Image (cartoon, rainbow, N blue to C red):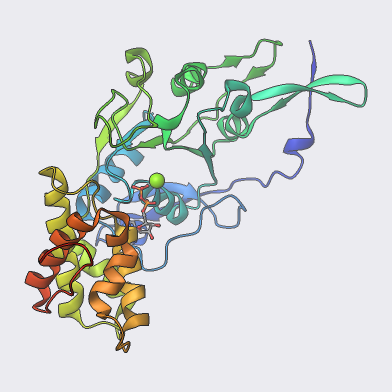
Length: 328
Ligand SMILES: Nc1ncnc2c1ncn2[C@@H]1O[C@H](COP(=O)(O)OP(=O)(O)O)[C@@H](O)[C@H]1O
Ligand SMILES: [Mg+2]
């Protein structure tokens, strides 16, 4: 049997279990205890400043976190609805070290599981991040999993079942007693969405079967308004932020109806807010529209953009500027 490299584990910090209340993690008045670790590990993700919990998602997380043996999650949902951020903020609040695996289409199973390397004349097995996390009980986020080569996911089947893994070279990897694994994806892994998510893959039922499935959408207006409020309060008036959220909701509706090629994400809304504050005093442009176009509008065809401008005009009562080449 080959030697296993131990240099990758030499910097390990011991994890000290610690409990946190639902109130501490999600901000809702409940003293229910959730298991995590004492702070201090370098791999604990950073919480998002001004993060706002949607009560429904928080309740789903509480269910998952209190399961004796939680299954891996497959969280599907449109781009920028907050899938990755929700996971990061849960693990941040519980101080659970987290490994985020972002695979490319060219990623092979060995890239994330580990590979045999030559070290000082010996061949040693160097485990990949994912296997190390599996052994140590770190949370694992398989980000944008539908961009992975399906073969990679097949190679992870035993991990997804939290089984003992024996690698080709005889190396035995025991899972930690508790592991949170979660995948984020634009699709359910079944080819959902047709053309819009072109680089996504279709996975076999055996792979998909191993996941607990969640579908996330953009947050309800009151949550999105609070996100903007936390970010821009004192810089943008509340009624402006409300109208921005209303516009985002209208554009998402237009997207679902097939009238706009993509939905507006939370990221786009935040960018609109930042750009609006910057452009506020400009006289050479219409700041509201100029900032919207930088956040989103310039990414779509001018005719679609003109239609989106009419939504802004309705929600803000500010006349839309003409777009060159598009008759009003
Ligand atoms: N609940 C939230 N509160 C505050 N900001 C959020 C929230 N959800 C998402 N965001 C913001 O939106 C951005 C996009 O979210 P992200 O989780 O990356 O989307 P997804 O993974 O669904 O594509 C994040 O970087 C963060 O700035
Ligand atoms: Mg993401």
